[in-house]
Length: 119
Ligand code: HEC
Image (cartoon, rainbow, N blue to C red; front, top):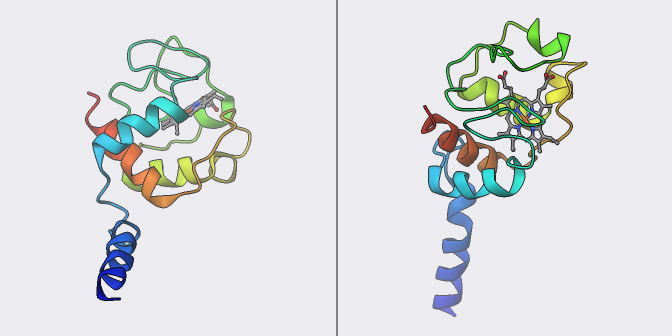
């Protein structure tokens, strides 16, 4: 009985960790499965390249054609803004053109931690 309880607590731990404590390694793998269809670090695809996106102004990759909405948003990509964007781009910037979201907060934190490592 006791080891079952221990296992239960162990399973709860990841969900209890703070949203800002993203795991870059887990984020790299989530990025691969959820983002790489449209994004690369070194070149534009369906979406703009994302190297150096952390701390950058939204809509700033010069040879990428952004939606007017995102280009005019004035957003600077920090933890909070990236989290809001990934949770619901259309809610944050109506008229933008990235049609996916990441509902799970821990996965968003992991992906953001990964983006920070991509200078
Ligand atoms: C279906 C294609 C698609 C997928 C999948 C996708 N994106 Fe995007 N992303 C876009 C497009 C298109 C834009 C440009 C949006 C605009 O101009 O309104 C964009 C823009 C962005 C921007 C803003 C970049 C800038 O230069 O301002 C960030 C950050 C971003 N995506 C992160 C992600 C992450 C992280 C994932 C994975 C969870 C992801 N995207 C998955 C298509 C996609």
